Image (tube, rainbow over all chains, first blue to last red; front, top):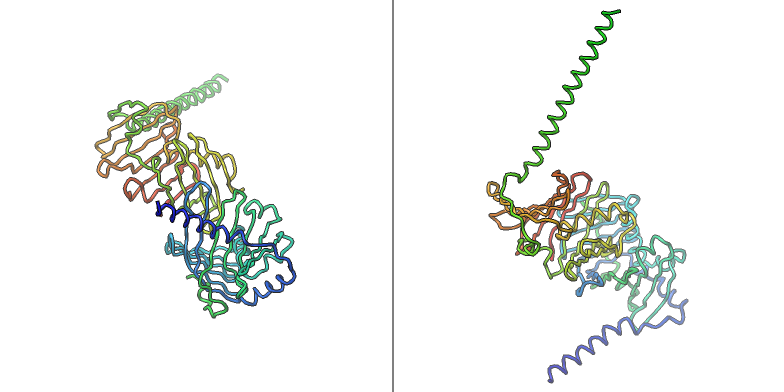
Amino acid sequence: MNKILVTLLGLILFYGISNAQEEDFKQVQDITKAQTELAKLSENTQSIQSKFIQEKHLSFLTENIISKGEFYFKSPNQLRWEYSEPFEYIIVFNDKNIYIKDEDKISTFDTESNKMFAEINNMMIGSIQGDLFTDSERFDVKYFENTNQYLLELNPKLPEMKSMLKTIKIYIDKSNISVAKIKMIESSDDYTSIDFINRKLNQTIDNERFNLK
Amino acid sequence: MNSEYRIQNNIILKTIRNSKFVILNLIFFILILACSCTTTYKNLTKEELSNSEIKNIPYALPLSEKTLIYKTDINFYKNDISGLLIIKKMDESIYRIALTTQFGLKIFDFELDHGILNVKYCVEYLNKKIIINTFQNDFNLLLMQFEVKTIYEIDNSIENQKIWQFASGKINYNYIQNTDSEKIEIINLKKRNSEKISVGLHRYKGNIPENITLEHRNIKLKMNLKLIQ
């Protein structure tokens, strides 16, 4: 009986905590102040090296699909996603070039010919550097905050983007103004969330990281 | 005048004879072709099964209660699509089949309900009737969901094969077991005995194939699946 009670209490507590992460965000009152703070984002993140955990939620699955890996970014336009789980896969965006390494096979594309990749690339760099939420032509932006984080809710305005995503949520740590999490919500409410863990900001990353041979 | 007429007549006769020869040749060729096509499994012992015996076919992929996730590459004309293919059995003869990119964004999300493919979501460039019908055929073949008229069990012991053949009008669906490995290693769809889709299933992990390749013969479409969960 006690065991059941403890489990139940634990469950309630866990549910409470996991829910609170979303729930205790309140609309930002002083948007100008928040915007001034957030303007530091680009300066604070000239480069990032971080681990990431990606969770894919599909309504018909009981468990999310988890992918993991290393993430590298160097301003203005170099990005490397190195997946180690569930299988090894590397995708590098370097200016207008896209390199993919999949099972020892390297393919090269350019962003002109692959619009979907180009859009993802713009979205990621734009989220990390903050250009995305000042882009009022493409997004409606709502500002939320709690004690530790800002949460920016971006709703796409353009039809082609809208058909892909309903909302992009960007979580930014107040302590060092850097992106901690990105959540991309599709119109069906299925989502992909990416958590950036152990972020190392503004450290030197060798250019070779953004080249695949 | 007369000779001219004869010559002309001769030419006409020759032409008729020639065309007769061509027609005969053509008939002969068609006959050979027809014979060579129908010889497949023709001389083998063929036993008709009842519908209730479908469950005895040693093909577990459609029955898996576990969510199956395959790393997937699709080559479709000039498009290369890669990501994760998720297959989940929801109920008897109801499946959800979704493809997401590496970054998680969905490419398509289908429900296969008693052989009918319903689109829950599909990126615009693939959301065409002809493509959706193709996917419907492919997943019906892979998950054995088509409408069945007659089922035969065919013993092809020379090739170490046992074949379960589903016949439906001009179309045959064949599930071919390698009698040594006791696994279904080849599936194909034949229309008037010419192969339209062929599937290879390899490296079984328990009852589930780790590698699946599906290829169309008359259109440029190839799928390569590798099990990750």
